[in-house]
Length: 499
Image (tube, rainbow, N blue to C red; front, side):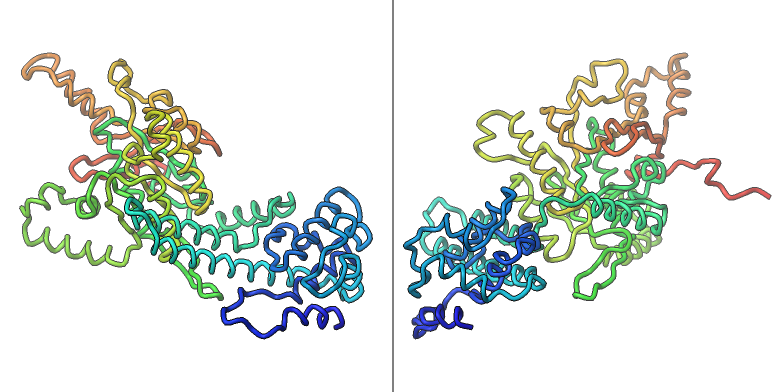
């Protein structure tokens, strides 16, 4: 090709002592030529290819000008494009004017069939150059970092940039046509139909809750709120266990793993240690009180139960991060790392108010800081395409009311929790309040109290206060306080048929 040989005079100079960044000039020329001959080629690459992805500056400029012309509803040709290029510009030192170079590009263009392949090649090479840049900057910063710059901050920044590259590398398509969006919706419904329980999301293990919500939906921020003593963490550990223990995956053709049922769970325990959390889960499943386990006050039969439960859970994909006092940026970096290294289908944060925001937001007050945290959690749920279940405290104003059932206005410290959440669940146990107002023994009131306690004992309500995708309402569950375990209540319709 004459054009290729002309540009090669400059490009094929003796190689310098340093390595050149990866690039493919011929692919850039072929794509630009295809666009100048048939503007349809532009629409095959415009969703993921930008001017900065081109290696040659003149190619980036030509693509930018052609894109502007086409988007304005006009036709991009060598004649219309050359008007917007400097007439005296030298093309890579090859002695060609912009008009001559554009004419050559169009003359030597072949077909638009391969336009997308050329675009992907250019994009991939640009990504490699970005990787090189990140690596070089990482080395330079590590050498010249000031004393007050923590290495951990650099690691988190590099992880964030690498994850962004990995995600953007999927050739972001921008707008999606309604026909394609409909296909996604039908695929989701098809998977729900084939899955046990006909759920489109992750099954929590609580039948009525799953029926109302369709399971935990990817990209959703689910807030689980309640006053101390209601069992928020117990509910979260129950869900974590139910999802992780039912995990089944299969290997795709490209070597990656696809989740069929259940899921891989990442649990950020900012309050409790990993050992305390594991003890709780073992207690829930073996029906041995956690206090008994911690004291070692168990018999041989109980010990056998503990060993059997530990063996069953050994391969369960539940990963716990027990670091306290981390920032939302650190949490996001760790979640990205977990998804990249092991996979991630559900993320749990216990609890939201123990996270910190940026220094800038912290100076503006706790309300602004919590707003930043909830906004970042919602963005992270969308970025990772997983449901995030975050536990939140409620304000004390609940205690001052006769009716202790929580409301959305009780969410503590920020209205953004309600605004950013897709689902808000309140954990409420009337039994907790009834027990706390026990009257004197051997009195008429004590008899009444016992009757009242009997009605609510072992019961818990999960109140759906907000549900962006469906109905609100109240789900009744059983609750065994000694094992901190929630369960499905027996229903007539779930019992086997009587003969």
